[in-house]
Amino acid sequence: MTLTVRLRRAEPADAAFLHAVRAEPSAARFQPLRSYSERRLGQLIELRAGAPLDRHLDAKVQWVILADDRAAGWITLDVTSREHGIGAVGYTVSEAFRGRGIATSALRILIDIAFAPRQLDLERLEAVAAVENIASRRVLQHAGFVPEGPARGLLRIGGRRVDHVRYGLLRVDRDVTNESPGHLPIPRKEPSRA
Ligand SMILES: CC(C)(COP(=O)(O)OP(=O)(O)OC[C@H]1O[C@@H](n2cnc3c(N)ncnc32)[C@H](O)[C@@H]1OP(=O)(O)O)[C@@H](O)C(=O)NCCC(=O)NCCS
Image (cartoon, rainbow, N blue to C red; front, top):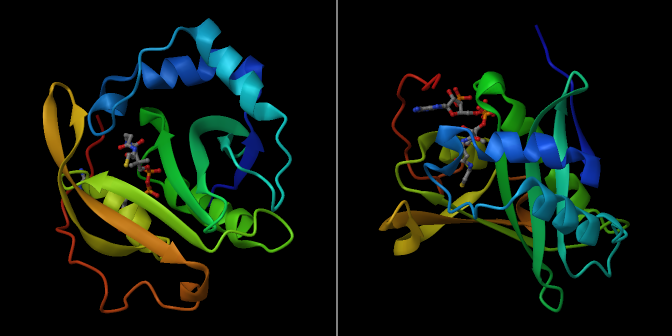
């Protein structure tokens, strides 16, 4: 059965949901999540909630991913350089919702918002994924991101420096197919249902 995936700007009332997802054991396996209290998360969301989604946005924005109108995860876009039209994306889907294409759909929606000249009007999106984070690398690949090389020991996660792959997507790439030769082969494994 097909799920309908939508994005909604995160609101302070989402803090409890976001806090619960961040506490899931697998959420922090491949990303360095700070241990914010629910109250602190609410404050951060409030700071980000009002920024208009237009070509002047120069900040980090967060959305709740809705699957059939149920909160399933979050996705963020950080405008890291307005001058150069660059944003960085990040996402997490709650364990109960994984493996159903939700992150891939959410990322595709975000790409449209990011590149649309009447919305964020960015020209380049970036992401990093731990080499071992096959699920995230597949999501990026399905959404058209191109691997741009290894970044050894890029982030400290769980007390050790973790090798990553850098990914990029240009607005002018949008018509390139997901099977373009630029993609690294990603090993296929049984999805973890943890
Ligand atoms: C990465 C994450 C967001 C993916 O969410 P999702 O909604 O399950 O993603 P999708 O269903 O859109 O796609 C997942 C893809 O990875 C594959 N996959 C999932 N787990 C896998 C595993 N352990 N090994 C191999 N492939 C795996 C799925 O089969 C699917 O690929 P396919 O469509 O080619 O079959 C989710 O696993 C997550 O929140 N992980 C923890 C946080 C995280 O790592 N965030 C990203 C940081 S860079």
